[in-house]
Image 1 (cartoon, helix red, strand yellow):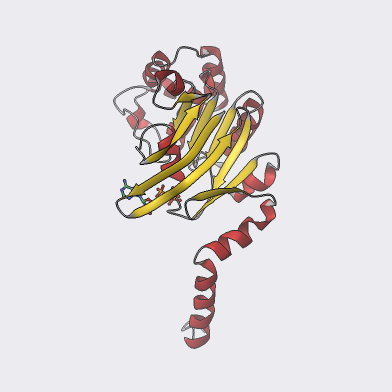
Image 2 (cartoon, rainbow, N blue to C red):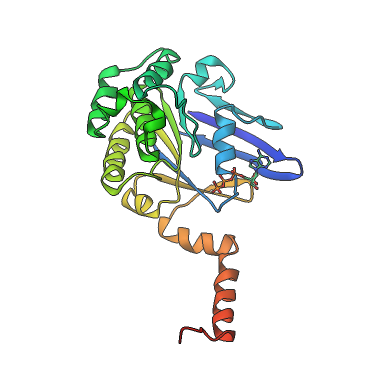
Length: 243
Ligand SMILES: Nc1ncnc2c1ncn2[C@@H]1O[C@H](COP(=O)(O)OP(=O)(O)OP(=O)(O)O)[C@@H](O)[C@H]1O
């Protein structure tokens, strides 16, 4: 279980996470939604010890997140990732695998084949498209025997077939591990009612009991309602020149 307790994180005077407490169970899929800038990436970065925080604690299966043992229980696929472009896909995978005690190379080969990346594996990452880089990272993550896979907008950049394939992989691999996904993909959220959905807002997280209310919550929590009203007023007051 990943246990976050009273997590407080600010950037200068901008408090992003405010005494946030949450527990992520060790299997299944948890999805974090929230408006832009609500702190979703910051939260994942705090869990993976990429970003320091002022107070509170984060443990991974009761081990402090800073311990090596905690880090080898997690793998993180960030939304903005910088892969070493001078390596081939295979060299990159081997590099990641060397840092984790337990992995299954057959699983890696299997997922790479599903993604049609076998021949690309020997090419330099600099020749990969964004979607190919994403698939490489997903294949690496699924090959690792890690309990927790954290991913920021994992479906971005995938074509529709690859998206459906990735959804199927995640749903099935989640039977024995945990995926913590930051996603704005409402299609995915609606298609996977067993996933738990959390809304991050004003520095805190709450479970969304009824996912059909997400749109309503986002509209009311953010500026969207005001923007809708502004658009209506603007179109009422300004004649559209195309008419
Ligand atoms: N390195 C940083 N220095 C200063 N402020 C930062 C830094 N990183 C993030 N922030 C601020 O922290 C807040 C949360 O940012 P974060 O990227 O965690 O949000 P997010 O929910 O992931 O947003 P998005 O949906 O746009 O990806 C924002 O106000 C952002 O401007």
